[in-house]
Length: 125
Ligand code: HEC
Image (cartoon, rainbow, N blue to C red; front, side, top):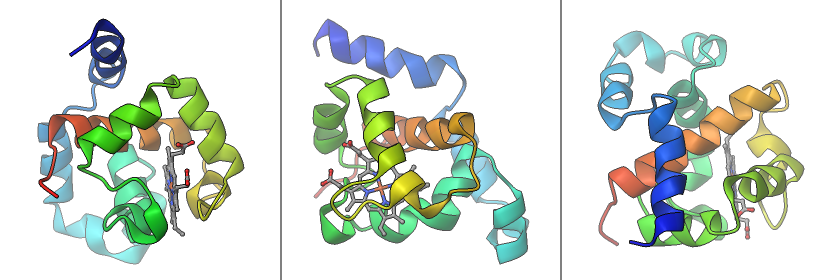
């Protein structure tokens, strides 16, 4: 693993998006009702309520959650570049992932969450 990737990995980890926390929250039954998911603006709730529609399966060529190679490749342009592209939207990716109500920080946190989950818990293709 080269140094650049290690540094990229350190960012979401340092701000506390560990995958075990994510698993704990995902296991809570109240996070599954639509009202709860819209009201809960934590990164995992945002991702599980909206982004997963496309990124869960890799629909329309979206980078699939768990596809470490694809996320690492995209993040190689820097996380800011990733955030900028996703905020504007392009090629099937709606602006702000279809959640215009999110603040910049909330949207960014959702991206970091997806990225961190993909590199720390890669899923076999
Ligand atoms: C309607 C389907 C759809 C939804 C919903 C969606 N995305 Fe995407 N997303 C895509 C597609 C398709 C791409 C690939 C676009 C491309 O070719 O780079 C993408 C790409 C991305 C990228 C990579 C951008 C880049 O420049 O490489 C990020 C980050 C991202 N999405 C974050 C999110 C987040 C966060 C959410 C939820 C708030 C979300 N997406 C919801 C379809 C979706």
